[in-house]
Amino acid sequence: MNDLKLKIRSIPDFPIQNITFRDITTLMQDGEAFKKSCDLFYERYKDQKIDKVVGIDARGFVFGAVLAYRLGVGFVPVRKKGKLPFHTISQKYDLEYGSSEVEIHSDAVMKGERIVVVDDLIATGGTVSAAVKLVEALGGTVVECAFLVELPELKGREAIKSHEVFSAMSFDGE
Ligand code: AMP
Image (cartoon, rainbow, N blue to C red):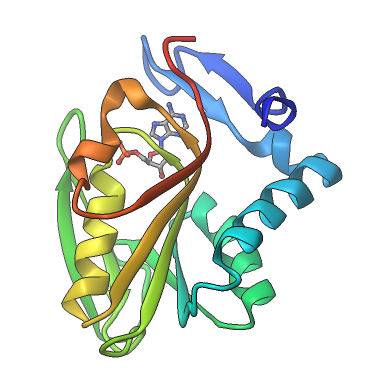
């Protein structure tokens, strides 16, 4: 996994002081690394009887959509408030400063469907927890939450401890 990790660019003090932004665009723009990352997710879920992939706005759309295509299942976006045009349900969550809200179309997941939730990165776990609540509110079963990158110091797994979490790589105090 180290070869993939080397493709991630770290930007100090972005978007604010003392945050190191893990920039996955450098991995995505490298064809081999991008394919390897997508294949990794596919191999993990290909035999899990997944019904749909839920991707989180916005970088989760990239990896989530590729996974859905390869599994031959539907893709569902969880978006920031105000972007989805049909009936939605929404979930607020706390950020380090302030709060945010995400939404899903109310007809996007059926009762009993087996779902993988995908995002590029798990930090505090607030965003994915909100996405999981939306999926479950519609009656879906979250099989696992999958990320390219995990920041273990921020204890995202604890925020979502009743669910399985998979990450392809982690940055721990680096
Ligand atoms: P959280 O809700 O704290 O787990 O944050 C996860 C969301 O914020 C993901 O959609 C990430 O893309 C983004 N994010 C949070 N921290 C970082 C970081 N250090 N580098 C890049 N993206 C981040």
